[in-house]
Image (cartoon, rainbow, N blue to C red):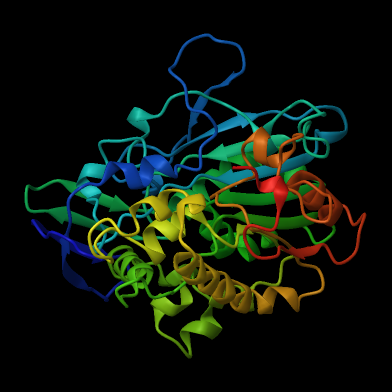
Length: 418
């Protein structure tokens, strides 16, 4: 992945007393669309008194704990209280929005001037999909407590370091502390008495769901039903059209810049490079908590950024295909089928886990749990005649055994729509 280096960032990784480690890394310019297009956020709206808005809550005392966004502002979340039979059930959803990496085309310093790096720019939002509080649109989880955690650290809620750019600007890579501070505050707001809990997330938040799944489980008594649903977070270490491993370059930059090793599986770190252990294919081998993976075989973000990133192909030969799978030639479809084969192969570890579930459709999309249209509606994608909402509900509540569905090749599924 091509980058333009224009500033130096000194990173200080937090380690036990007596240990110091200083690293100089290059940081590339901001590419806002990467984060904005895949924010993993329910519909964001301007702050006003419109009905249906869920207000922003800043985490109390977070700054004193060093649990801060890239710019040093406190982390935040949106909380909608449950009711009736759902009053002791909780969903915690981790927002997505790419990464702040030494190798990507967006800078950490630029990111902190947006809602992906500072709570100063965050606004109230509306809830949709798995957050919807209407039973027809969200039959199993409509009346649960729902917390949508904003993403402002740039490392899937996993880093623990800080840095300083050449202009003297300080940057805080404190995703792990944000995770701990938010969960602690939610526990103090009633999640500690939950009978059921679900950790979920989209894109970079889906990866975070895998990284924190077992830790989330460990925060509750054994008798509490705790499960995880990563959505659109199964990123592949695949070669792009030019033969480069673009996603690995991004993840390696995140791992080195933000010091994420503390959240990586120890058994993986004993055998492999930390960057390997940041990929879902390795993470799922170590997760013991029941997990339901929602992903597309033709994930639109990965087609555009992993398989066919700009610069990996001559001219505009892939421009139309990467934006709309319906425009792909038969040869291009064969390349995308290769991505599908690799995804299915890397999901084998999940297929072999009895309490796990899968909804792997063939739709050209990215993140499907947080929108009514893809979560549960007459036009939602279906596998085995079940929407994602129905499949997740059947799995979570044990209404069906073996809820593991992997779709046929594109364009076989008419419920994907256009």
